[in-house]
Length: 295
Image 1 (cartoon, helix red, strand yellow):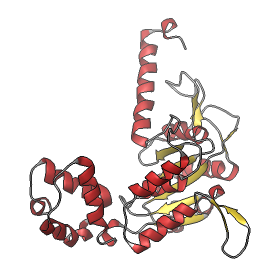
Image 2: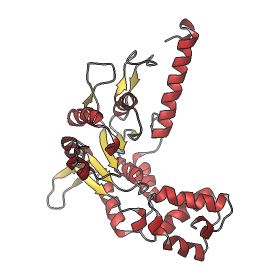
Image 3: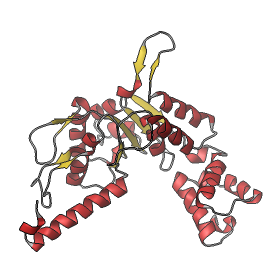
Image 4: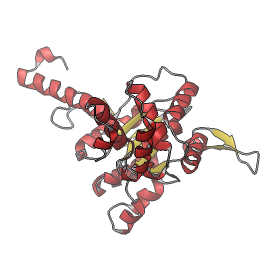
């Protein structure tokens, strides 16, 4: 639409709608630009970013690496294409689900796009995931491609899928089953070719039993399930992750006493990595000893 031919009021609406979509893209981690890294370098960076020395977590990462490839089965010469299967990542907040999804994306040539289901209104969620047609709702002045299409031959990471209302679960089920979706305002389905990785910090099995999550959708998205241990159960991982963050931010290194204090309080990390980063930030930015931060 040419902004010179519409009223000032409509022009402001166009600008506000574009700003809204840009803000949503920023918050959801949406990728719209081509990936300049080679798939192999991208996988190496993703693995390096996931810091762990915990044996149980290392096994989950090993499984994630396998899921980004085509590989022969151990008991035969048949090659299995792991990339065509849906994956569900379960884990507490801050346990590394997004990082693990990027490892699963691995050597796929397409884009990695991400959407967080928590707190999104129905129309906005549908518009972001499936796209919309011009005139579908107030402010929809142009067609918009959804994330499932923009991730062509790549990976769509759908985080906090347990937050979706039942009304949206039915539409997501149709998309997962048929690899087709309906943009908002359109009665014609469009096909997409991306792989789908889902994540949640909720117990979906309990939600199914309580009637809060569709059983058919659960079975569709959980072909393969990866369960990440919480950071509070990963022992000395907390020191490695803290050291990595401190180096990245060029903060003051932990001394031996602070390291021991951090280990002694690892069971308090219910918020995972984000909570750990907050502790470290307060220590550095407010020039407080770690003992004061943890008091």
